[in-house]
Length: 183
Image (cartoon, rainbow, N blue to C red; front, side, top):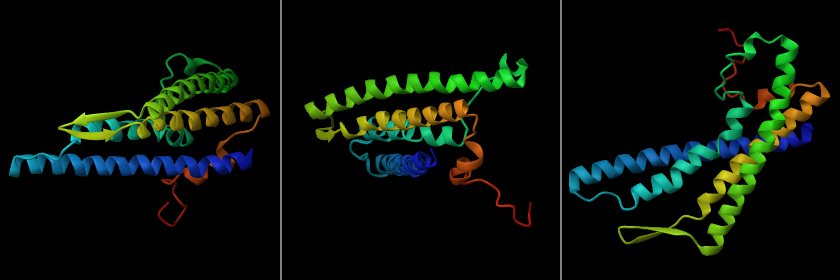
């Protein structure tokens, strides 16, 4: 299992970096679009299409596994906080399987959609500019697929009575305090 995690962690990190770069590129393009429109009356062509069709899907789907790897997804424990510790552990373990199944179905559905858009050569037109948009369709199956694999590993770790924390979380926990003199 450590071998699989050693493959997942770098892939997860790379997808998160690509999503971060998409945020920066989107901020630069939108800012440039506003400045060009105000100063020269000519906005940057295709900004709306690129923001909605490229940047947002990359920002939304690619870092899903990274956020789960850091265990930073939002969780609300209205009722489960009152369960005994053992009950919470088993509930969380089986939720990993449920999430794996849901993410697997989302991976399959978005993959079919992405392949379909690839085959037809999907594109958008804004202000007379043709923008090919099928490549970004693969962001959703990449994000969901990696998240599905991560949930599967967490479920297997639950069944084996192991934890994903001690051995693997430290690699991606880039905000971890290194235990230096300021601690």
